Image (tube, rainbow, N blue to C red; front, side, top):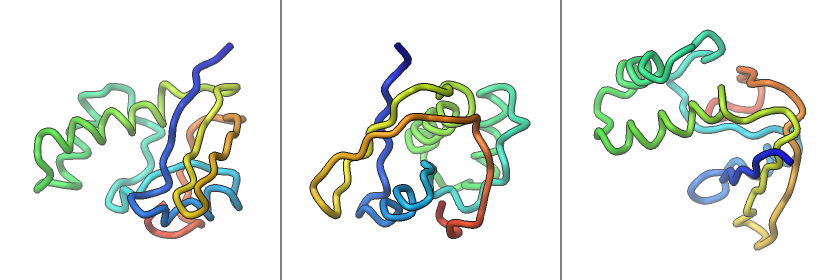
Length: 109
């Protein structure tokens, strides 16, 4: 059995509908480019710091960890649990492909 991941659709659930309609998961890091070529966590941390220079060390560490999971730790077949704040339900899905960068679901996703 694979890993089970919890992914949230934004602090106020603002991405939940797009996650569910698009069959995707993602985040709100508008200032970051595709991370497909990132091969080390240190490289990711430096990229994040350039994109978000005012972020605290704790915030940076938290988000770099989340991003690293999206691009390298989550694997095809793993389960994803999405607590849906807007309805009080829980959605469950399965990762069916590798990390992909896309902007067609809105700037914050």
